Image 1 (cartoon, rainbow, N blue to C red):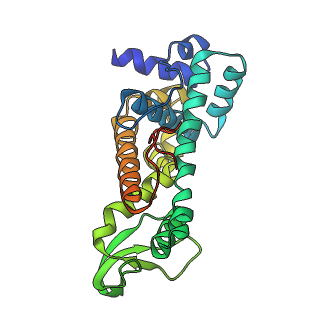
Image 2: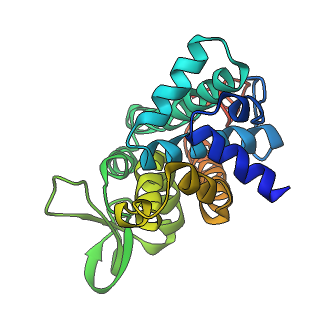
Image 3: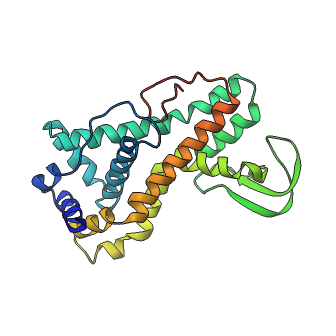
Length: 244
């Protein structure tokens, strides 16, 4: 079974239409977190981005060509890609909502997390003032945007939220760094594109762990923000099933 899956991925990277047509596909539907459909949607997004990284942008063009030919697997993968991008874009609405309801400090932290290149990380030395609670603490979580030399600090109790928000909002950036870290140019030069794609397809750290982490991060962010903000909890066309 594993060889079959790896073979399908290899065929995809080699532009083998028959192999790609055999790829699993799910119709785009309204989804909720922790459902099988949601996991499959995130997985398709992860695979498309990972293959696109090692192919230097050629894989997504290949998918778009096949979508224009109305091939179901390509239409499904394209739809799933845009569903996840919608989820990521929805996170940019939280700073606006927080600011509109008077939570200026939360809006500031969320806005900075959206623009962080480096992961927010805890520090253990120095006295800092938590920008949210205004309480002084030893160390704290350092958050700063790429263009800023002076960071802001929040209490370590907000570490999980900061990591989750950053991970979900910077999903493409995180995935790109993971793939390039494991499958760098020197490594890829030793194998064909089809072989590298097959390795990624079978790589549980990328295919499974990244998917699980994204769903977990998105769940925690939505739960935290909905506990803070007055947001109606009703169905929508997002994985979170929240109207943001």
